[in-house]
Image (cartoon, rainbow, N blue to C red; front, side, top):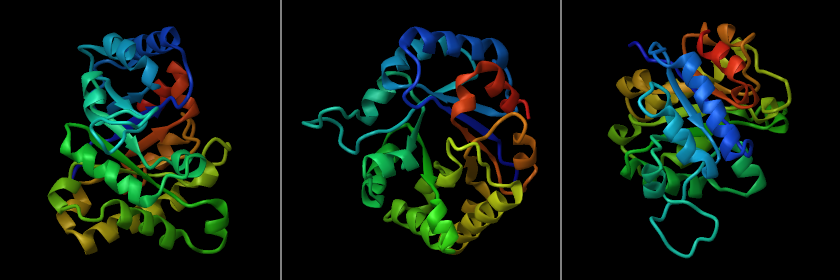
Length: 250
């Protein structure tokens, strides 16, 4: 089954509104119409509206970096799915390792967020991945599949067909270290086999699995040559229009 690649840029806590508008406009000039790859950018909340306007009518799609599981309420500092939709978002990153590490986000919370996102029009990009210590203790399978299993608890194969999974080894995020294509492929293959066993072979073959962790123009081709790697969740390189465009044009 042919799976269309996805390259998503996570801008994290970077760029003002003006800088975000300029970056989005630059990416539009370089990548609009590049339809062999699904391109997504995820600016900070404060810049979603200006990025949406800069990308309006283009083939580049807008995403957010997080969402709350409630529609509204006394949740200071949070943002809801319908608010993101109102800003023009079509995608949302969930369970990123930095959310788990710095904000103590649990698998149960990721599950709630995932279920809420699937009730909306948003396409979730669900992140899973192990730390260096966990890899050193041979716990990659336990950690990655454990996070995945708890995140998709109570979900059907039909609803899961809408999600994208991103494998992001925590030890490779922002460190300059990248899992070799072969190392990444082992985990991607493991995820796909688990999906086939727990849900269905059809879902397993349809669902796209991205790699995230110091992705750059000079390593994307090797990663994308692997049969079970369907794209990338890009961090630092996504903040430079030329670098991000180079990744998209792998």
